Image (cartoon, rainbow, N blue to C red; front, side):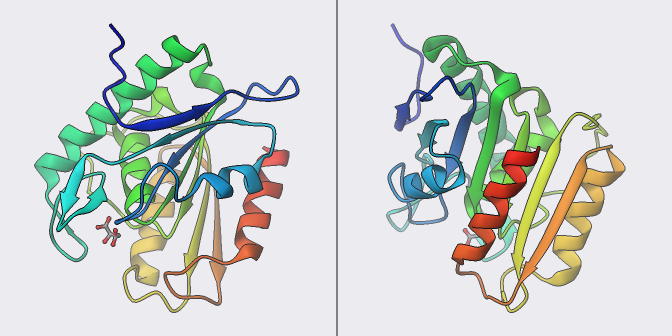
Length: 205
Ligand code: MLT
């Protein structure tokens, strides 16, 4: 029996592409919400779009929080490993290589992607983190020198402070990752220009 224990949507890569984009939605989204973003990032890439298992007043999320921006760290750790194990199983079931997996997460989805990079980096090659914040302060210092990370933030975002985003970028740099941090004249909402910039970054990385 398949052990693919997250609700998800999968489409294989097209035209000889090997890349798989792992799509992780924000609070209240699902596996369909950000599918068009994966296509805008790379129309030929495979897409594995996952629905978070936590429900907050009916809104799907990837981990519990105690308040806005205050995370349940025990649950975050558990859910991070659970998602990493799922990515591993999906790579075997669908036949893609972990070295070709790019996470693309927005908000809560970007936060769990950041957490996966910090705790289980072997399941991702690179990541596009849209409106990410520092998920936790890791005790472990894992080597991220083979990771490329694109972080895109909103200058007027009330949820992610400038310091918090800079701290996250620095945490990845301190572990050897190649980090691009882009600031947009936006709030927590996404804009087309940053998706285009992320797509271009992906082509070059
Ligand atoms: C989170 O809980 O991950 C962040 O506050 C972002 C969000 O509102 O989902």
